[in-house]
Length: 93
Image (cartoon, rainbow, N blue to C red; front, top):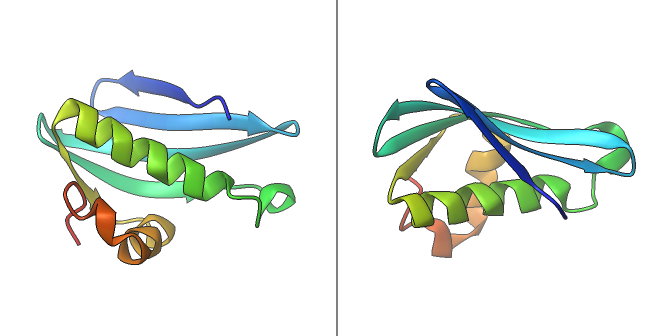
């Protein structure tokens, strides 16, 4: 899955197009060491195909590579983080 990273000022998003549908995770950069994930959007046509999970995992890897933490305000991302104890090094629950 090809995931694009976009960041403008303090706002950013990770997005992908699968089967002609776009899915995204959006975030705000609260500081150089903290991003707030505020939304995960996956069209109904892609539900259950692991697209949201892949976007969340991409955000975690980006946080690890960039040396920042994630505060998950998005209910989906928060639920994923609670299932993935191995993300606790970068996710503040």
